[in-house]
Image (tube, rainbow, N blue to C red):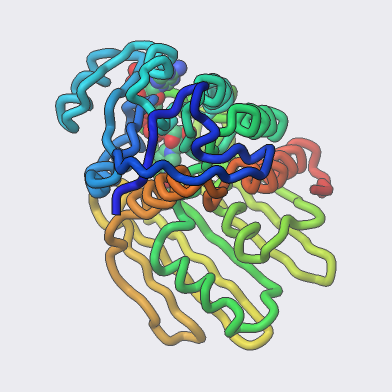
Length: 360
Ligand SMILES: NC(=O)c1ccc[n+]([C@@H]2O[C@H](COP(=O)([O-])OP(=O)(O)OC[C@H]3O[C@@H](n4cnc5c(N)ncnc54)[C@H](OP(=O)(O)O)[C@@H]3O)[C@@H](O)[C@H]2O)c1
């Protein structure tokens, strides 16, 4: 089924329901693919573009904007995108663009998303949602005022293995421990903005912690009461921290720990979820091509799933975004939901700075 989508402009936002008003005014009868405008043409854009290709009966990439025109043109040629623009504001004026996929550096998400909301475009924005909670709140307000969907690309919510684990969490009783290790090897930054603490918002806490703290929040069903974190910079190639340990404590003795690293070889990405009546272990391994992963899910040592995630996380994620837009409903990992994760990230960075636990 194609997404049932109409042209979105200030004149017809309400076709998708305005989340402020709580009104859902139904979905258009016309079956037209969702017109996507890509803002950013770098590494992660490739994963989203491949996802769009996988969903070509439902979405159409109609334009791409990047600062370096040659790079955006080359990506446009590779993916058959008809319009290339040097300024994302031009893309926001295009009537063919119903929704934007924002794949730019961390420090630009909030401003671009607010501009997109004002232009009446639905928004899928890369994680971390923003550099801090106040910026993220401004994005939620702009989206709600504009009556547009705002979803954060918390891609790791979309593997079949993690969804199976979450579906089966009740089998292990009350969860009282989550332990996540997310370590990757980067001798050099894969892209320039990683060098700048201001652009990245520190480094590993926002880059990887935005995935891991979202998992903690999602699996335990609530934010922690307090966060304590330590971090270190071990590589002069960047200004921010490349090692961090985060401890999230909940009332009642529930604890989640997260170890993050950009300087650990070989990579290791695992989660242990411990309940009163059993445990799940989730292992993610790189599959070879960038942003493709293998997953293994175990319950009490028994292997439940093991293999390549296909279609990609980004395909499932884009499908959820398109369906939420078409149905006028709140998407998974909505901007409002991810505000809780932003508060956890802010608490972690404040704790790292001050050496004290921080209330969330
Ligand atoms: N979900 C995941 O697992 C995952 C993985 C990787 C990255 N990410 C997130 O994705 C985002 C991008 O990361 P990346 O590694 O793809 O970075 P990247 O390779 O450096 O790509 C960033 C792109 O944004 C463009 N850009 C920067 N400022 C812009 C602006 N004002 N207007 C239009 N385009 C602009 C750059 O254009 P030029 O090429 O012209 O400079 C470049 O094309 C980050 O927020 C990152 O955290 C998520």
